[in-house]
Image (cartoon, rainbow over all chains, first blue to last red; front, side, top):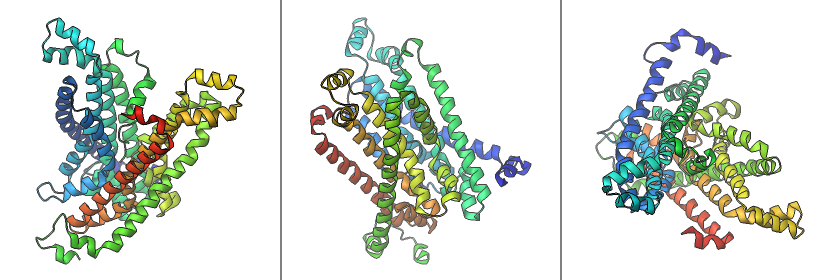
Length: 236
Length: 225
C-alpha cells in the first residue's frame, strides 16, 4: 500500500512539512487554545459557581457552542484582516469552542457542592476565598477535570480543521492532499489526525484520574462519562 | 465576482448578497437539511438494533459503547477523508461519517434510558403478566423516551454544525458556501450569511425537537425546569 511507503519514507519525517514538525504545530495550536480558554472560563465559572448565580448562562453556553459551526468561526476569524489566515485564527477559534465544556463542568462542579458543606466551612471561620479554594474546588475536581479532558480532546481533534484556513498542523496533509488530488497524502493525514486525537483522549483520561483526589474516585467511571457526553462533540 | 471584491467594500452583512444569491442559499439549505436528516436517521436505524442487542446481552454494552466511543474521538476531517476513497465524492461519504458521531449519542441515550427504568416498575409489569415484548414497548420505551429524544436532539444539532466539514468533498450544505466564500478573497458576506444560516438551522432543529419532546412525553414538563 502507498500509505505504508509514505510513512516509511524518511523524507516525510524531516523538514518543514515533516510529521514531527506538523504534529508539534498541532500540539502547540491546541495547547495555546486551551491556555486561553482556561484563563477565560475558569475564573468566571469559579466565581459564578461560588455565589451560585448564572446557572442559566453556564448550562446554555454549551447549547450555543453546539449550534455554531467551527468552520464558520474559523473562516470568519481568518477573514478579519487584523487576524489573518494562519495559526492565530485557529487558536482563537479553538479557544472559543473549548470554553463551553470548561464553563459548564466547572460551574456545575462548584455549584453542586452541598450548601451545608459551605455553611460548615463558613462556621469554621473560612473566608469566601478560602471556601472556594480549599473546600469547593477540591470537591469539584472530578467534574472540572472531566471538562478539561472533553475540551482538550475536542481542541486537538478540531485543530486539524485549522489547515483549511492556512494554518499548520496535521490537517495540512489532508487539505493539501485534496488540493493535489493525492489520495496517499489524504489517507496519511487522516490516520495521523485520528491517532493524535486518540492519544490525546488516552493521556487526558490518565491525567483526569491522577488529579482526582482518592476519596472522590469512588464516583463511578460511568457516572463521570455520562456527565461528559452532553458536551459538544469532539469533532465539530 | 472576485474582481469587484478586490476593492475595499467587503461588508459582513449585505442584503444585496442575500438577494443576488437567493437560489444558491436555498439549494445549500436543502442540501444541508437532507445531509443532516439522512445522517441522524441512519444513526437511529443502526442504534436501535444495537440497543436491543445490548438489552438482550448486557455484556456487549462495554465493547459496543467502547468502540463507538473510539470512533467518536476521530476528527470529522479524518473520518470523511478515510471514507472518501470508498464512497467517493458523494453525499454518502458525509452522511455515513456524520452518522458515526450521531450514533454514539443516540445509542448511549437509548441504553441509559432503558437501564434507568426502575427495577420495581419492571417487576410490577412482570407480575401483571406482561410478556418481555410488552414490557419493552409499553413500559420501558415510554419511560426511556425523554432520554432517547434528548439524545436525538443533541445528535441532530451537533450534526447540523458538522455537515459544514463535508465541504471538503463538495457536500457541505452551507459549509460549501463558507469555504468557497473564504477561498474567494475572504468574501465576508457569503461567509457570515452561510454561518448564520447554519446557526438558524441548528436552532430550528433544537426548537422543533424540544416541541416533539413536549408533545410526545408531556409528563416530563414539570421535571424539565
